[in-house]
Image 1 (cartoon, one colour):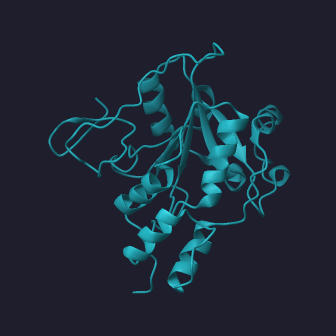
Image 2: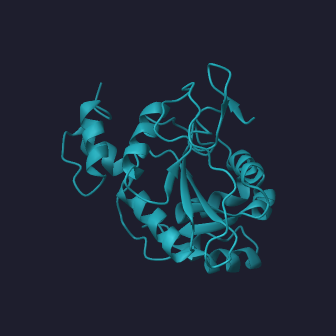
Length: 241
């Protein structure tokens, strides 16, 4: 058993459509069958604050799925990212709700609350270990990151082990050119990261932009899905206190 709800029932890694710590068992992301190509199952994990999720995140996930033949992309909102000084502005339950709205009608996208229900800081190594244990050794596990995280990779907890548990997929982010951010990595790792790059992900939208516009009462059209924009407005998120 991985986690427990208030009722003492085991929680699964992927929980869709239920609130945090809901007692009812939700749909489980278990071992997957091989597809028609005969390949092993391919699952991408996409972690982050998602404060809030925006169209740039969705475009990265969609590009990763298409370009690297992923069967599923699982969004994993962090409780508190280790390399960010400030906690998210929206609560974990609010960020989880926005993600569920964003992926509701998108085939192949799922959301996991495993980092939100886990106490302490959200270390990627703990999440990847849990998914590897849940999905088994046959599954090809991928971890999606933005190029803005490349410079931090060597300082990640368990970075050396991560490379043996999953394959990194790096999406380019505006203002963070790939070549200038890999100086702390061995040449062979840089070559591997380039080989698994996610192409054509230059959407300049950022969560900071979304929060700023929301605080100013401006429309969020083309920045977030309509359902997420409605949730932000209804719950008055990111407004000045």
